[in-house]
Image (cartoon, rainbow, N blue to C red; front, top):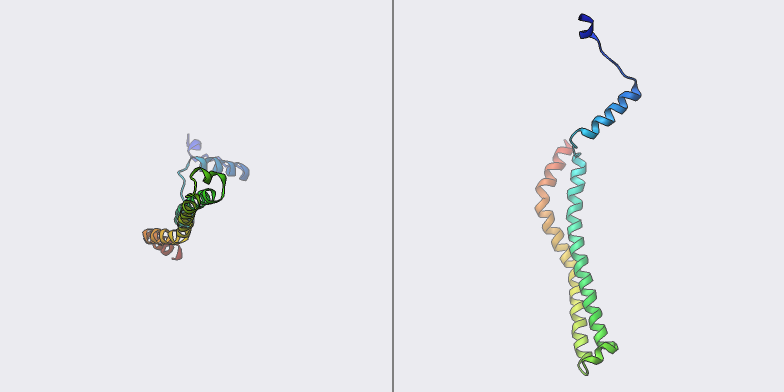
Length: 128
């Protein structure tokens, strides 16, 4: 009976590696602090980029509609007002396009202000 208590099984290095890899699958995932920092930073730029791209695409579409009204057969449906209306719609599209980049900068600034405390906390922990 005393032998059973002192018995210890050892596995080869290959088996221990396999045991560790299986164990990792069932352990709760711990996110590395550096990964958290990268994810927070990427999230800020991702949001600003997505919104500014949407605004840019809408502006390009509006500009295209204005050009179509002014220069194609589609404008003939409106009659003599096709060129002035098309020009106004086209300039509206240019205005929307021109807003995309300043909007990007504004969103980026606001999102960075929101997330700054978390970024500072994580960088302080990493620099220790």
